[in-house]
Length: 147
Length: 151
Image (cartoon, rainbow over all chains, first blue to last red):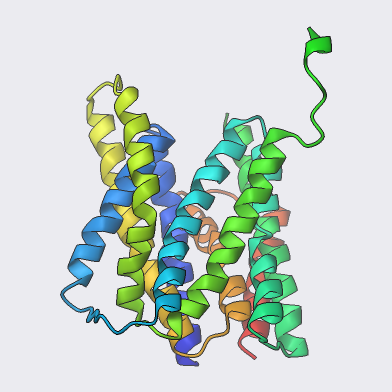
């Protein structure tokens, strides 16, 4: 297995587990409070990361700005997804729609970074998005059944 | 009453959903650009700095509504939220590392977006939830997608 793929799968597994832990949290406290403690954990982790990270002052401004923007974009994305669910959107529709986000990354990476995908990888990207949507639809239906 | 409310061109929930796609979709792009000059750990450090303003905003909101009962369930909810943050943060580091090690944003983003498959598998194994046909199909397609994307 290629090294990058191993790390991507590790991210997938860890984020997948958070799907369960987040539900366990929001079953007990509000989504805002849950998000706040999620952020505190990020701060704690980042302080721990200082032990192994080696930041230096010669970093290019562009990469630093992109990295900081990354935190803001991802956090705001979580916040807007909560808003979408709280403003009357059906969970099955909202979550399926949001699952389209990698499509935008693919388009932006091809247009702005000049990345090229093979035919197999293009088919894989489309399959991945369809799979994510199918998984979301069923999960939401199940939640509705429980409710 | 309806006369005073102009019909909205786009429902609010749809606007928030589209905003989410825009924000998360762009995150993959900026993460790839950042990974060209930063290691995954420094990236996570700066990522948290970017998260800070929103954290302050949410903290103010939570502070205004601090009437929640300090029950056992409350602290248990905080524990799970904290664990979500730790696992999510380590997941971020792995995501950044995938890009540092040469993974394209256009491939890493679709692979990692398959994370609901793990949630579903965990529910199947530990919660003994029954999967519907759509879910089985989604799970099967997820494995096919990873195979195709790794080609």
